[in-house]
Image (tube, rainbow over all chains, first blue to last red; front, side):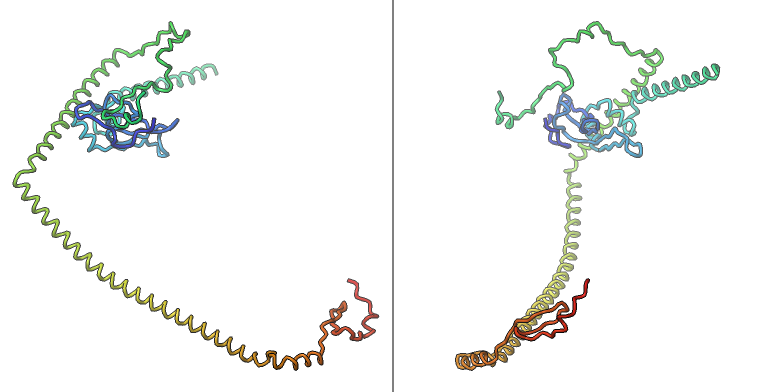
Length: 133
Length: 212
């Protein structure tokens, strides 16, 4: 199946549910996503209604994950009642367009917890080593 | 089987459900080694659960408000667009149009002036170029004529010595009277001895060639 074009050829119905979601465009081992609006019941491999941005999840040389957003059109589609998929909601939350997504908070505090635990483990191991010596 | 034509001429979008390539087919049962495996449920502490619940409720409330805001804004924009066809806005639009036309004409006049100047310059340049080329052509032609006339003069000079039917006998006699011998001999020193019967000095022969 050929790739859907970057923008705009998907047929859609005015009253059907739309969704703003990530659509994978990269190749093997190189993910890259378009942020597109499609009909909600349609597959990601099918033509989209409109592309609203892009997201590159692989950090570049400056350790940045690049995101491009067309906020005007996102506003338009939200006004039309489009749904937003969780990953896109997270990105929009980090960009300051939405409130921060709960999952962002969750991953943050879980990461912090594991880091704390690892530190404690390290300290314990050092202490035991010293005691043994 | 669906024909290609009917596929291309369809008015409704095609909805195809295809399983992902890495999934096994629907009809393949659970693997024998995995029949009695019960996946472990994620453990979420009570504290975390309550916190997540609170955050999620907040988020949902905020999102609802945001959505409503965008929706209302869209409706407002639509209404302003609809009311744009009133008389006041029509007049304003006409004024704006006139202003635009004026500005456009001004720009056009300016561009026309510039274009006229440019055209003149271009014409002058073209004339100069043509004249230059014509002059160069004339020069070349003159040179060629000069060259040709020079050649003709030279040939005429030489023509006096040509052998004609009238002077043929004399030329033959002259040739017979003065035979020319082009034979020559050469020694190791590179000395030429013209003629077939020229005597060669004997001392030159006695000398041994220098061994190199």
